[in-house]
Length: 489
Image (cartoon, rainbow, N blue to C red; front, side):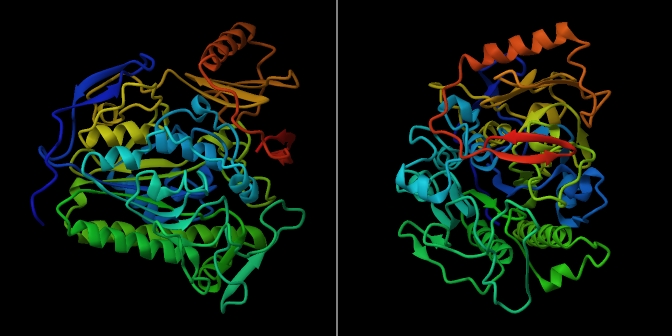
């Protein structure tokens, strides 16, 4: 391959660890001097912490996802920006907490999204646009979920290429296609039938060309398009950024016989389909990694993997309550702590386990800094550059605290402590995660000083946040690992 990727700047702006939002300059660290790394962000949809084998889960083997951890660093305490799809994606794409710009709830359903013109505010600079300014070719394959109208369309926000769907969910394949298996768990609030409408069909490019692919399993299709993007752009003299945003294993629970047959030991039908959906995605992640390695540029390609939030525990029977309690929509660890890892062979030593708190919002700052760019100075960023921490150049911690708000629910993690409370006074939960990682014992009544300390810290943080730009959809009530909760969407 040709020698390329000359840095546009000798220095980049990062957030000082534990020093709040004030930006400071630092030399670009890691990688081969004079080269900008390719950047691949792989995002799963509603994948639980216990659902990949890298974290010790025994339910589902994910050998290809595990390759990223083996060759890089796995974060034990990685958190999403929100416990639900579109706000978490807003945080990932902007490096800013979604509550800073009112993105507190999902912008769906599709009809509301379109009719009310809801989406990521136009003045937010997403990672694709920031990297494009550094000379990157940018592509998105998969789920967007940050607005359907032209103001928010991916190719109008910084992506050179886009193929995927714009809303929160779509079917994986035509229900009558050979080898298709679909299950609707009894009493489930999941997508009730696998079908595509005008709002959630697969489209491509600025003209929104309709893609006729309903006879192809969508996870395979997205994997093939991601591989094609890598092959084409690896041959270019420009660095590339690929956002491979799989919609697996989000509902509808729909799979193919060949994946279903891998799990004869699972007796529950919904769980078996769910496991097979994850296995199918793992295959395609393997194909993406193979394409990166075949390009000859694996050493200078950053590959991230993470989930947007926890497992969709409102679909009874598919999620684990160990090691993390709870799931999507909840503020238990199972809702906000997610699988998260990154590899960059020329900059990060493989086989690392990093145990301090990190956030998917850090992807923005880490990537832009690695690309030689600077954070815009006109706004606060919540993500930090992780490279000094994973390379050992900094012994500090990336975040003193992380907060989440989805009114009326609010939570904060600071050190080993986690507070989750209802702002309307209905409940207050305080946990010491070091002693009680499954959040089984509420110690709010025994630790009044710690309770006040965390509450005050949350209230101070919330003063800088905006009110929600639109309301939640009707709340969802489900049994969260034994405890019923009413949760906003």
